Amino acid sequence: MTSIPDSHHDLFEQQTFAHFATLTPEGFPHVTPVWVDYDPEADRVLINTARGRQKERNVARNPKVGVSMIDPHDPYRYCSVVGVVTALTEEGAEDHIDELAGRYMGVDEYPNYESDPGQRVIVEIRPEEVHTS
Image 1 (cartoon, rainbow, N blue to C red):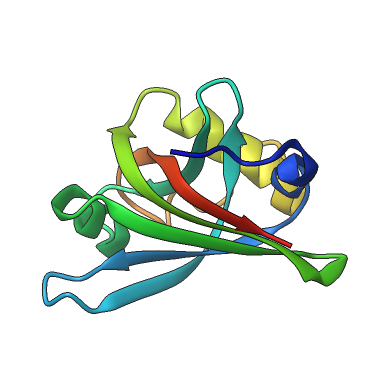
Image 2: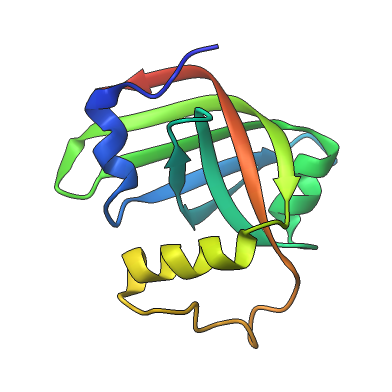
């Protein structure tokens, strides 16, 4: 197991979009763009999604995932994580998506609750390998 280096924590404090890779039941990669967060105290990369979405179903079945992000100000600086999902939790997930909406959209509340049905869930990822540049 490894951690996100301090030199790259700032990527989780700005509008850095990530690509989240999970595995389908057939073993194919399923990659989606996502908002991304990091809990340095728990050393977990955090993805917020809704119950029933493909990525949530995939990680419930197979917890091995990948997350890759590029610095929005320097495309040659990146952080790539290979890890394992350690939890899918609904606790605090609505507050979390509202926080992310503030960072990514500049609003106080996630505006897509009605068009994005399903209970919010936080996907907690323990980094196993971290590659940065």
